[in-house]
Length: 86
Length: 270
Image (cartoon, rainbow over all chains, first blue to last red):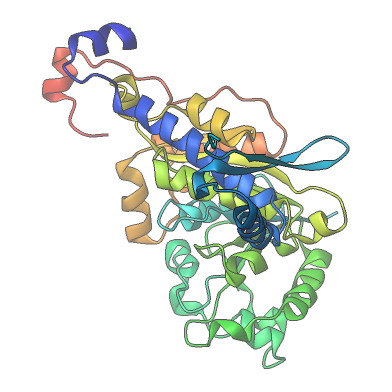
């Protein structure tokens, strides 16, 4: 019924669905941040600084993600930089 | 054993005080000795909603500082037996409250009462943390609206980390109360449904209060809406309190009843 109605209404997507989607994304982010240790932002910026000292990585080429595993806590570090042709 | 219950939400204006007044009244109607504590220092309103604002002499801070005895500050409800309230201070600085002071007050109240309902101030700062710190259970009040749901999630995070139970490795039993629910707008997909909210917040639903004219009417008069047993909101609060006490009741007022032409023309407002 909801679907049928939204089909005939001009709006592309019912606003309640938009609200749900936005909330799920926001709340996921909030929860991730909530569970992160306080030192993480500092560690991140120091890691980026050190890595960029040696590579030609842009800020966006360095990705640091934080995971809570059942037994351990993990930081995943992905670094890339433009290929240098010799 | 007395139970300490915090009514909290994060966001302001979603119905914490209204809910605290009505759920507390309903618990007392069932014969449980109940006391309501207003934690909103500087913005006290629970006494207004309960209709006892003119009988406030001493407040919570007066007790914690020793200026008054608990028995002097407790206000007995005129409508229901077994129901008392403890007002917040309107004039004092909110830093005047301390965890130690509150602990003493709550421990003393535990001797006398079955339920101690703590009406939390809005926000996620010290005042809100203080209201929830000694809680055994929490009722998270949420409106079907993005900012309210997000703030509720943050409050749930605090309940999981900043309470005494959390510090001791236990958990605060937390349940969800959705207020100002409008089934017609949900039907038109312009409002999130209770199922959506329950899924996002991932705590069990224990009540839905429909958007209702009766709520404002009740607070205008200083009579908790649960006394208005004709009204949908009043009945919904009765249901909520019964569920809180462990009774299994189906959710009402969550489905949109299509009105016929006749009632649309002559039905008037509920």
